[in-house]
Amino acid sequence: MTHEQIRAVARELVAPGKGILAADESFGTIEKRFAAINVPSTPESRRDYRDLLFSTKGVEEFLSGVILFDETIRQTSHQGPPFPALLLQKGILPGIKVDKGAVPLANYPGERITEGLDGLRGRLSEYRDLGARFTKWRAVIGIGEGIPTRYALQANARVLAHCAALSQEAGLTPIVEPEVLMEGDHGIERCEEVTIATLRLLFFELQEHRVSLDGLLLKPNMVLPGRKSGQKLTPAEVAVATLRALRQSVPAAVPGIVFLSGGQSPEQATANLNAMNRMGPHPWEVSFSFARALQEPPMRAWAGNPAGVPEAQRLFYHRARCNSAARHGRYSPEMERETSAA
Image (cartoon, rainbow, N blue to C red):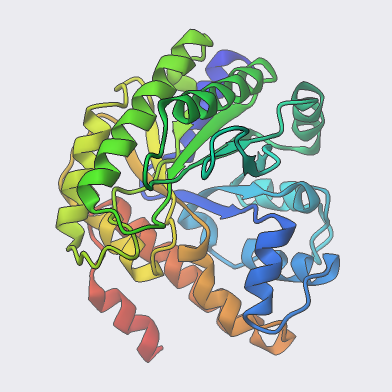
């Protein structure tokens, strides 16, 4: 793709009322989630589950893209076409997770760095030929005593930027995901401080790597207190802190911000996204790239049983619809009661 096509994909992914399904769980992650519903994690079960999501009738009204895992981009749907082709037939852009996971950062206890740059140029070419239109690379930033260090922030920013540069070189639109984790007992003020520092260093490195900012998307965490902090905040309070951090660190050239749900419940993530969009307009589109917040209810309904597919698809459609409404600031708790009564 040309640079204009790369920019066009970025804009299409944040089209009004639409967002991204993150279906790129690694083998380890999906095994844990399947274990919670007593389903063995096999190539067949993973294919069956993702097929029910991708083939849900009408979900293309709310989804602009799907992030796939290496295994999934090579699998074929029960309807016949490979998953990337099935998604494209529905008007949904297929993307691909290209990092190989986070590992301990040498000499920096408690901190991690994401691997996967070795051989990435060749893998990007293959993924493009398999139908991918965009990429995603995730970095994880922990908060604790003495961390994050500036070195860890810089190291992760550099690999995110390097991946983005290689993606654009390959004609793919990059999504960069620096996730400040919810683990710990820190308050929302500390999360905001770390989020700003993380994003400022990231955009410095992106510009150093000559990445076109209008041809990428940012997938950050919402600014939230640590799980063990005991802080209870309203969606409006989360929205104010998150938007304040973004306005201090994200250039207006970036077409869109697609939030991760980061361990929140589906309803919490949607309500927080909704609150942010009610406070617009913003310099960028404010959207979603959710995994658990879209998948948790349908995964439980399916539980590996073919008879559960219709109910799983109904719940998946509903969660996508709720988040589409949040894109416009029109989500309400009444929408949740609608599905309970259905």
